[in-house]
Image (cartoon, rainbow, N blue to C red; front, side, top):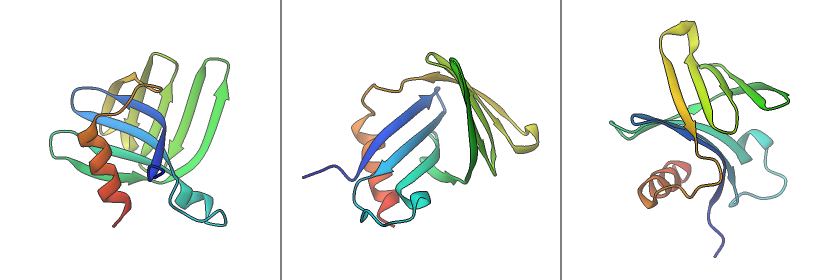
Length: 114
């Protein structure tokens, strides 16, 4: 059985996790905003919040993602997520390509099935 999602980007620190996932359980004609989802996970409270994607930019080694809730800038090693109105900044390690934990995978699967 095909997993319900594929993790495309995975950045985290001790307390926060940002991921882009591609849902594999939707029909091919589903809206692209439903297929590709950015999620912010507070690892202390296990709360998952969707990030509303607005645009992206890429220049050489640096990637940028703009959301209603803030801004993410990252390269192959590190990233910074800045919440809207600079209410908080999160320094992250880019772990894209590494397997996410079983616990995180179950949390995301439950969230996507709501």
